[in-house]
Image 1: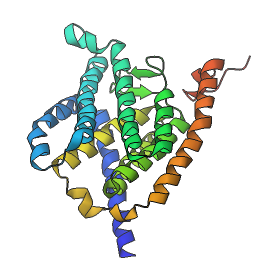
Image 2 (image 1 turned 90 degrees about the horizontal axis):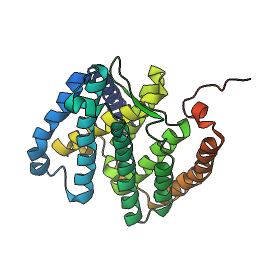
Image 3 (image 1 turned 90 degrees about the vertical axis):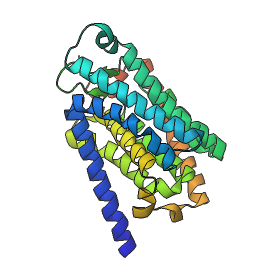
Length: 277
């Protein structure tokens, strides 16, 4: 009972901290751009602590931190309506395609790792997620007002499939960090629900993942100490979880394609009611 309480409290606290970080990063977009740029100065610590090792970890952290920095300055460019030189460049549609590509790349990285580990069913779910990312720039935007929020009109089912697919991947790839990974995924799910703005899911995911990877790189022993979930691993759970994700993914890809084919995506992706004639 004491162990359950320990994990319950630590996970709830971590989810709360992550959601607070997302709120701070969203509301303070100038600070966010410089903060994430400064995180590159911690690069020597990643090596000294051993927090980043192996091709997957290096690709993962760099493919998250570097785009987060670019996104930060793109938000400044749009929110402050900056023009000229690099600022104008950051406001063009290529930025939305770039961010689309980064999301695609991050899912692909994990999918390749799933295939290497023999998690073929979960890898199938990862492939479906790549196929069903709403297209940029139509369903992507960086607001040119307020905080320069990144808005991505993913569907509720896409968000759910991403969450359960990613949980299953982490469970297989590094069960020690499974509990903490649940936290970053749930924080990204819950934050936009609380704000009443589902289009904030991806930006919440960006900042929760970047924060988590940065902490793991600098203090790799932190999460194994406070919420080590290595004993939770069971190969049968891994197998059947992957199968369940594949079962969810297959009908979803057909639904997604049908929405695009029939022109219903404009309403279903943006969660607005169709106007009746």
